[in-house]
Image 1 (cartoon, rainbow, N blue to C red):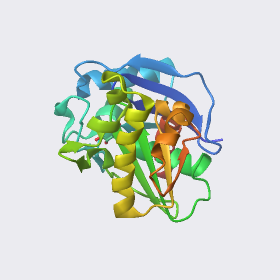
Image 2: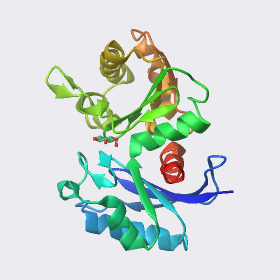
Image 3: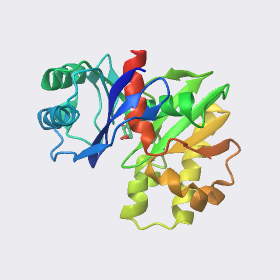
Image 4: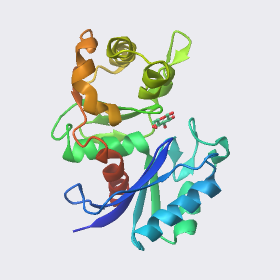
Length: 246
Ligand code: BGC
């Protein structure tokens, strides 16, 4: 059994658990600490240290981060403190925790988990996973191979980016009905399918639990749409997998 500590960083919480990367199972309790405000590299590095200490962890750590990451360096941080930009995240978290830390975009992480253990297993061709949360994240796979760092949440539709129209945060903030929100999401999916012609969409994020309440409002999308199977676990499991494949 290969055990990796997976840490999923979100706009509101930083969650960690031990993952068996051979089976995709979470093999410990989950432990969550609120994302500090402002969410600076220093403040978040301290939380990563606390999370590893909680698990008495000295082994490998995989971290899912809500931004573009190239060779460990953070390039965007739409929903965190902007001082993250151009910081070597792998280095900052490795130094703070004393563990070997590898970072990956959070949606890419969720996608890896779904392709290996969830809704994308054995699905050929182009599979696109979207995570619907504070922002919208995306992961694109071609015959099971991840094309890292796509940012479909930042696609502009009528002058407004997709995550300002159809993230689950917007549903809450604007108190949208499933129908109103579903129709906004449908437009985003239609735009993506026009450009990529995927074989499958997988919808993740906490709101994937409510899939049955909104799928009927996505009826003008021609691509098959399924909810993520690993649900909230995908972020942590995928973060751990990022370490395993690095
Ligand atoms: C970020 C993405 C991230 C997504 C979900 C977006 O604002 O730009 O990198 O995957 O939020 O957290």
